[in-house]
Amino acid sequence: MVMPAWAQSGADATSDPIGWLQRNLGGAACVVYDVGPSAQRLEHVTENTEVQFEGCRMTLQQAAVRGAHSEVRTYHVPLAALDAGAVTSFAGFVLPEGWTSAGDVPTHTIQLAVPGGQRLIESSVETFDGTAPRQSRTHAVDMLVRHQENADQIVRALRRAIEQCRTP
Image 1 (cartoon, helix red, strand yellow):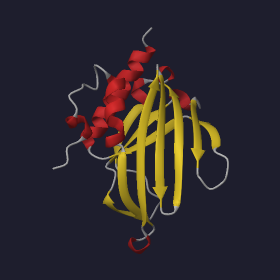
Image 2 (cartoon, rainbow, N blue to C red):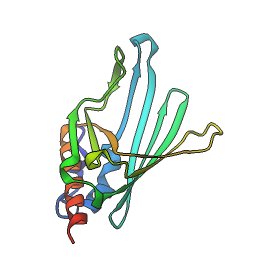
Image 3 (cartoon, rainbow, N blue to C red):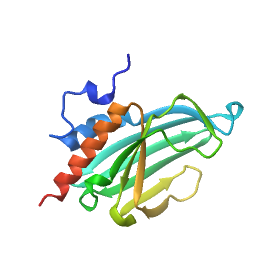
Image 4 (cartoon, helix red, strand yellow):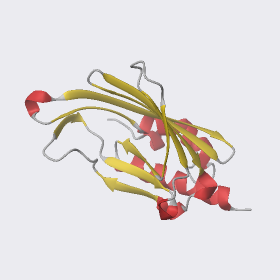
């Protein structure tokens, strides 16, 4: 039986949310599956998310390999600028219309969003194809996870971390 990441740690996601996220997010947000326009044209996908904190500045790094393409996406998230209610989770993950997936697919998508659509999250994408990393700003970041329990615990921890960062 596979145990969700939160069940493998004695730490509480609400009393020490930053510590809990550092210990558990990577394992919960590591997904490996196949996706494509048809069952005959599937590409293998591996995605892993890691997190680090410098005070209330959260850095998420998502390494992704899809077929022959690989990239690392880095997001710098000012937690105090977020609203705890803007951290949401929904079942499944978004695929292009008509596409299919197979394997140990993500069961939930977690989204961190800046209120009002303000582009306060710094983003960079490195593709390892000889081009310079792309820098931009965004208003939202998505993380794919397996197991509803993982999604619930991650959302709870992120909301609590935001509340702690917003408290003077």
